[in-house]
Every structure is written in C-alpha cells, then in structure tokens.
Amino acid sequence: MNFMASKQPENSLLGPEADSQRTLYPYVTGTSVVALKYKDGILMAADMGGSYGSTLRYKSVERMKSIGKHSLLGASGEISDFQEILRYLDELILYDNMWDDGNSLGPKEVHNYLTRVMYNRRNKFNPLWNSLVLGGVKNGQKYLGTVSMIGVNFEDNHVATGFGNHLARPILRQEWHENLSYEDGVRLLEKCMRVLLYRDRSAINKLQIAKITEEGTTISRPYSLKTYWEFSAFANPAQGAVGTW
Amino acid sequence: MDLNMDLNAPHSMGTTIIGVTYNGGVVLGADSRTSTGMYVANRASDKITQLTDNVYVCRSGSAADSQLVSDYVRYFLHQHTIQLGQPATVKVAANLIRLLSYNNKNMLETGLIVGGWDKYEGGKIYGIPLGGTLIEQPFAIGGSGSSYLYGFFDQAWKEGMTKDEAEQLVVKAVSLSIARDGASGGVVRTVVINSEGVTRNFYPGDKLQLWHEELEPQNSLLDILNSPSPEPMNI
Image (tube, rainbow over all chains, first blue to last red; front, top):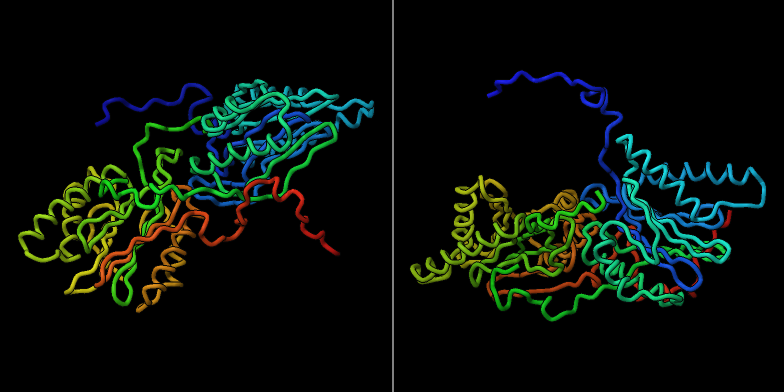
C-alpha cells in the first residue's frame, strides 16, 4: 500500500527528459584485450567476438585498429562506442597531419587525448562504455597504457581489460620479463588467451594478435587456438560421486 | 560492465540440454559449462545424472536446485525399486521429479529432461520445465542454449531415427548451441539408453564440427605466420 504520494522530479537529472543524457547500458560488447611490451615494441591480442547479452552474435569483429603511424588501439566494451572513438581519432590524426610540420602524434599523446575524452564523458554521466588499450613505439620509446570508461588510466609493461585483469595479469606478472622475443611474447599472449577462452563466458575461439614496432603495425589474420580436454577426470566426473556436477 | 563480475552469483548451468527418442531407446545430451556470473566455474561438468540403472535426467538452471532434486528422486526411486521388485519405469521417475518441481515451484529454479528405457513403454522422454509441468515428448530441448535450436529441430527432427542418427543429431545440436550461447560450452556429453543398457559418450570441444565463422584450431600463430595468405581479389 502506498501511503506517500509520489514526488515530482526536482532537478533536471531526474525524470524522463534527462534520460537521453543518462548512463546507458551496453548492447554489443567485446571482451578482454591483453597487451605486453616486448623487445621490439608492443604485442596486443583480442578475440573477434561481439556478444549481444549472452548470445555470441558477431564473430568477426576487429577490436584492434592502428592509429596514425605510431599507435595501436584495442577496445573492449560497447562496439558502437569504440567505432565512435575511432571517428574522433580519425579527426585528431587528420588535424595532426594537416599541420604538415613533420611531427606526428605519438602513443603517449593519443593515450592522453583518450583519457580526457573518457573522463569528460564520465563526468557528464554519459560514458563511452569501453576499456581501451593503447600501445605504440615512437623514436625507439615503447609505450603501453590503458583507459577505462570512468577515466582510470595508467601505463605499464603489460595491461589487460575485463576478465583479462583477473585471469591474464597474474600470468603476465609471473612470466613477463624485459626484452621478450617476438615468439615468446606471442606464446605468452596465447597462453593468456587460452585461459580466457576456457574461463570467460563471452570469449570466442577466434583471435588476432597485433604487433607494433618502430617500422609499423601488423595485425595478424584471424585464427583459432587448440584447447585441451583430455584430462581423465573430464571424461567421467561423476564416477566417484553420482549426481555431482 | 567491465570489472562487473558477480563471482558470488549462484552457480547456474546456463546450459544446453537435449533428450531425443529413437527407434529402440533414447539419447540424452548436454554441454559441460557451469557458470558463476560470467566466470566459467566448471568447464567439464556432467549435467546428465543417473536416477536409476535405466533412467537418467538432464539438469539445467540452478546447479544446486537441480542437484538436490535429482538426489531426492534417486533416493525415492531406490526405495520404490525395492518395494516394486523390478526396475522403475521412466514415467514414475518423471512424475517424482514433477512432484518436487511443482510443489516447490516458488523456491526452485531448475528445468529438467528425464529420459530412459523400460520394458513397458520402451524409450521415453519427459520434459519438466520451470513450474513443474510434466510433458511427454518425442524430443525435448532445454536450458538457455535451447533458444538457438527451435528452428534447427523443427527442420531436422524425424520420427523413427536409428541410434546413430539420433546421437549425431544430439551432438550436432549441442555443438551449434555452444557456438552461439555464451552460457553453454566445453564438451558434449551424451548418454544412450536402450534395452541393452547405458552408454556414455564424450565429445571434446576440439573434436566438434566447425560452424559459420569458426576456424580450424592451431597450436600457435607462429605456426601459421609463414603459410600463404589468401589470394587477393582480381577485379
């Protein structure tokens, strides 16, 4: 029973007129991005899934894109917001090129720009629902940073978004070291991606690994990882305890 | 949304479960993923649980609720078998499940598919969805992954299949569902029940057929880096 009369909204952030300004929820989402610094630059991995709630709806979404000459951007979260960010960055790079002064925006600058964009949107309660990984090399300097949808940003030798924070980073803390070779870096990323494939519901078995060095960016063709299911306990788990899971 | 994982969410078997009758018995099938929120708590679960020698049940929904219901029914059926002096029928097993599901409908969240073989009626499948409805069907599908299979079964199901046809249908269906349902995954388990007995089968994730936009698994990118890229288009 309702004894209190419902009150009218008092300020402009409550009530239906404000909904177009409010925080939304994501629709088509990408899961983890994992990246690390290695001898020649940055290696980044992301699967190609675009989930629609619990449905694995799109399986060829490229979640890593090269930005300008020196940067690589990977994104998890809402794909439409990622596409909007790519438009913003297109414009940023265009204006940078139009100066025609021989200078070009490096990864640190791009990361800073993204941080400002994400944080300012967050302050207006209208976030871009993404976690971004920005990596690159300029003048021999390697850079790897991340920004979240609320504007939390930092740089490190290895970063991850989403589930990668919980599953990949412990592996990277243990096994990353300075001056990894390309092969070792790829193997380490694949190890992380395989664990994510086993344990993240929104992961799919189709990924790309991107490499950025002083020479430029390469994004691999899509490929799948082998998975292991032959533990003897997997064959018949209920043998010792009927009715178990 | 990002670090928004609910690791304390109740264990739920998102799941795909299937039961199919064929000419001589039944084939039950299920995936093997149990999730807590978005985390896969068990990637090799066994969702096809034995009730008696000749009756099994596929479990979906809350892992706890489905385990308890099947544990109680196994217990009741054991007593019933002793009192009856012969194996319980599939119908009795299904009705016991129904009684628990129906009478506790406000508290339980589990959808079950009971399948088995007895000498009176042969192979039978009973679906018992949320709420405790009992429905005998030539085939039944359940769990979150079943949404993706209604069209498939409308087209692919046929009366009077052989054992191998039925099992291949079940494996294909669970595999298709795993491809699209985030809550289903892992391996495909099947249980075939007929007059001769019970056979358990196991199809690991990497042995299943590849579907649209899925690629052949590799050991590593390093193995394929030097293989030829696809030919560029000729306009």
